[in-house]
Image (cartoon, rainbow, N blue to C red; front, side, top):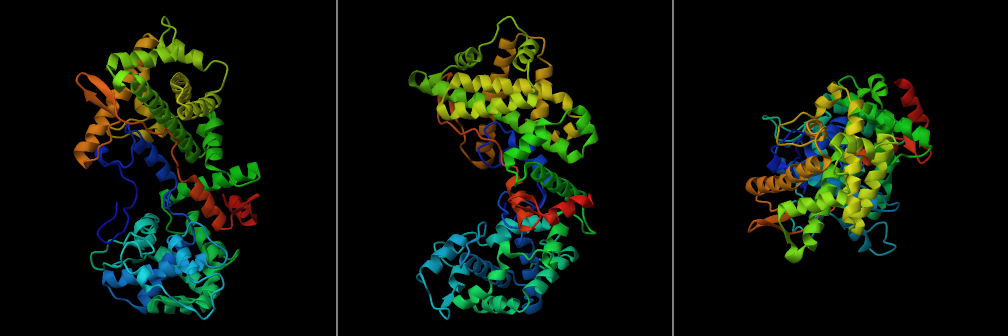
Length: 517
């Protein structure tokens, strides 16, 4: 959410179910998001380059020194011109990924031809103008990259102030000044080239080339800016909060994983490594952050299992005559696809499914089978994979101490790994076919209808995947089941930008950071 000035919201908070964004057909995403957002505070799925975390404090300090107007519109013009110019610099020569406005900048530079004169002038004031037509703006959001992406994360890290009632223009907190001062020091005379161009809204091609050292990948190893960025990123500064320390532990674990792999880790590497090797003794002796990442993965897998049942159920409904089915008949089809022993209890059924393998290994295999079945539309395979996931997660429950499970506490209308474990526990001695039918009915089908009705009532968003129709359920649309994206890729990129990580694993700087722990 953005406020009236185009600035993003701060630390993640529990919201009413109707305010949860995205499809989330069963309302299970928010507890999952809360866990991983708490473990990587200050990093989001759209904060793509670390150097913005020194660029924006420097820019706020420069604005205070050179302009000082408290009119938010004056600030926005300055900020947007700076962002547009930064995008032009990053598009010229060696292309930089993850830069806001880079597509616009590339189009502007392409219009100059293959070999423009170095003296050729680029007027970027119109593209940066927040009141220009959206087709011409470098970013459609009037808040720009600062307001729409980075401001909320900088605030979450206690680097900037956005909500001072006496000063509507954002400004640096004391903790951000080392970042600003380091960038002043690192770019030297280039600061005047950059800021002069921001004020005029014009830049020559030759000046763009001069400004190449400010690109995100050009943070100088061993320089003042690199040290300031690493200090803030890893929570080593004097004003570090407990949330900063959780981020530090996560980043150090990523460096440890990279060292063991001999390369940069990917999201799936981290998810399964941190999930697979944890048993109760390990969790008691390891940092909280590993237990919490394991809990995140368990929670996301439970969501996948339930959504797999929903997805397959929707296809079964779609293939029925007139794409309509009664709820009892739909549930009967789902249970039939599970291939259950009608005489076995739920406890016996779940134990059979996980016999001969570790919960983590079986869960990994089941997730792969579920996602592959989702692609090929094999209903029975997807439903059986979902059931194996549930069985694996039931066995995995004993690995999480009560203080770790407390992280999933939320209002009753949110569902999570914790809530579903409680439901399963109450059903263990009952016939599996009956209990799993109740889960498919109450926790999946009716749950979706309830979630969709809340979203429609609170947000006017029509997200029903099926609709009640004269005593039956009518298919409306399907959806794609997919694992969540918990900011790990962005954290890895930040470690790379900070010169702590490269293609071969931790750098000398990264190994030095590991020694500090």
